[in-house]
Structures are given as C-alpha cells and as structure tokens.
Image 1 (tube, rainbow, N blue to C red):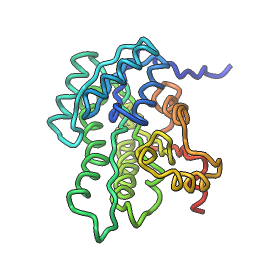
Image 2: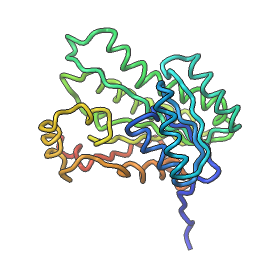
Image 3: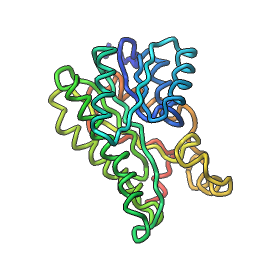
Length: 257
C-alpha cells in the first residue's frame, strides 16, 4: 500500500497576510477548517477582528490578530515576533497581501509604482525573510505566495501590477532554490479572476461579464476554488513540489495561446 496522503493541518501554525478581506479570509478559513491555528495579519485591525470572530465561530481553532505594514521592515519584525511569542513556531506562511495600481507606463506616478512594488514584492520578501530567520531555517516549513495569472501576462493599463506579480513569481522560485535544503517548501498559487478578489468588487457588471466570457469555464473563481491548491502546498501532502506556481484560473491562461 502506498503512503497515505493527508491534508490535516492540526497542530500547525499558519500566518496569513492580507487576511482582513477577500481571498485572505477564504484562505485563512480553509486552513482553519483543516485544523490549523492562525495568525491573521493586515493593516486594518477592526476588519481583522471580524474575520477572527467568524473563523473561531466556524472552526473553533485558535486565532490571533496582528496589525502589520508588510512594506515596513520594523513592522514585519514586530509582527513575526508577536506570533513567535504566542505560538513558539510558524509552520506555514501564506503571503496573500497585495494591492493594485492602474496606469500606463508613461502615465503612472512614481508613488503608485512604489506602493505596488513595496506591498506585492518587498512585503512578500520581508515576511518570508523574517519567518525563515525566526523559525523555518532550523525547523523547515511551507511558504505559499499568492501570485496571479497576471504574473504571466502583460497589460498596457495596469503595468506595475503585472510587473509586481511577475516579480513575485520570480521571488517564489528564487526562494525555493535558496531554502530547499533547509526543508522549506516555497511555492505559489496564481488565481485568475476571482469573485472575491481585488478587482471584482469595484468592477462594473458589464466588464465582469466580458471577463467571465473569456474564461473557458465561463465563470469567475468562487469560494473554495483555491482551497485544494493551498491545502496541498501548505500541508504534509506536498513532499516534492518546490518552486512551482499552480494556476487556478478556470483555463483563462489558455486563451493566451
């Protein structure tokens, strides 16, 4: 008989950034439903508390909230220390926090450019660096970066977002190569257009319908569509996948070929 595959997260401690809304709430809930205790991080403490109350009510796991500015090194250091002080370990890091800034390359402001790079790229690196140094370098662990199908495409009107997500995918692979020998699995998930993603809440219905029609499955991503990929990459079920970006987009990326 082959090895039993388990997605059980009982006894694991997971950090989820950008956990106050959207995909962050979904990803955190998925981990909790499989038994993980959580440290939820975001800049909005009030929304974090609402997320925490909801997850505890649904799952009964232990959840703490930590306010953080992931683009600020001192804030990240303090946040990771708070998790270590509370739990004594960090088994999983889900780098989900991200922002979008729009503008053509000749028009976008330097401030908007920096904001997007600072959160999407520098923030992912800072969180990974601190968690690895605080615990994973000696004990191993799993890092899952939430990238995007836009990591592999171009846009004339959202140039910095596409650049930041491409950089995040490259960072994922580089960190995977650097830390594989320490038992640290670093992988990513590239969602397509999600109903609870950054773009959907503010997008006019007609545009959403046009986007939906470009997806071979003819629908936007919904609740649970990322859970399987996340649980595989974050759990002991993954024993040999390293530096991989799993695309979860209903086939959208196929339309580029």
